[in-house]
Length: 181
Image (cartoon, rainbow, N blue to C red; front, side, top):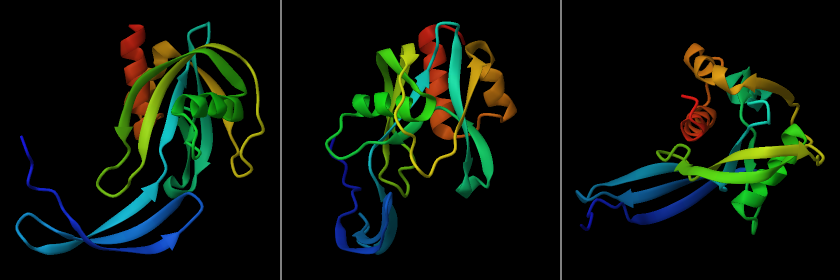
């Protein structure tokens, strides 16, 4: 079935170009014929990883997030570099953020982070068979690694201790896959 509700772009104006995102305003024509604008944050694809060790712990990262003005407990994540395969990115981010690599990486899902205003498309992975391997962390990140029993993840989500969308979605997918729901 063809959908006639697309919004053809009449004009596009980049208003900011930054290190991790660009901001643009597109003028679009609605199906009704009306013209309006859409504010869009252009962001590269990204990955997030649920790393589970042999003891059934998830290795989470706690870091300060300026937009939230708080320290958040999250799964490791990061941006896909140009020409990089998302699975390669996942392995790199594990090494940079938690100092481990994985012998087994399984794709959980891919999803739009916030499609109402952002182009970021995220690939979620489950990583097992963890082994020590580290790369230098990003210069602008201060991360603490926390091991959390997989069995306590649902309660951490319900209580609000884990409260970012990528972590909630990916952890729940991993729990479903691993049968610990």
